[in-house]
Image (tube, rainbow, N blue to C red; front, top):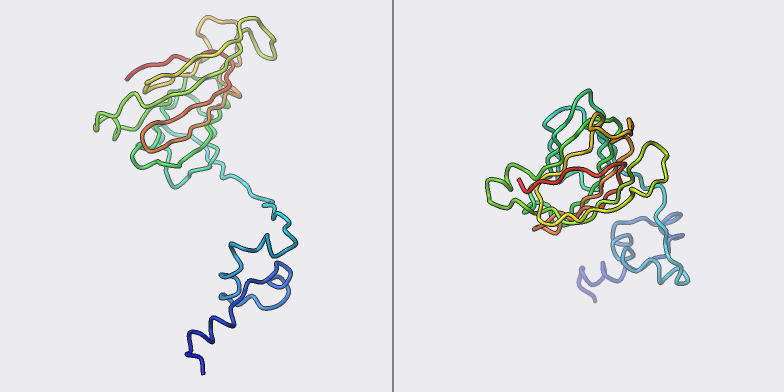
Length: 197
């Protein structure tokens, strides 16, 4: 006679998606099937659908992004410029999110105070694509800026002497961290200012 654990193991099995949907959804069946579900369903690939990202309003300053909100879209819309602080790099391996601007203020993106205290400034690397010349403009002033070892990015706000009164509205930045550096990819209406500290 089999010991109890062996009997329990025999009952567990890799089940098809249809079986788990319509018949026995016992935890043991679900657990055994989880990693093997696609090959057991005629080798079809399972598609994730309906996944939505969290949207977080940035409506105060300073505003500290959270590691627990990795994957979120932060939307900044405020009556004045906001300082948006990234989580500490040492806590953020694998963290990613998007920051989108919905106004024309000269918002500031900066590394965390924790990074500053630990001497880990200069951890922003990446590229910013920009178009200068006005809303909906196709202009020869388009270009890109490399970010190399910076700690602060300041949006080009309205009133900076250029003709575009829509600066910052629609700008968006994507951040990804490997636990040491933040990697930035951005599309903006006008080039921002970069600073080492």
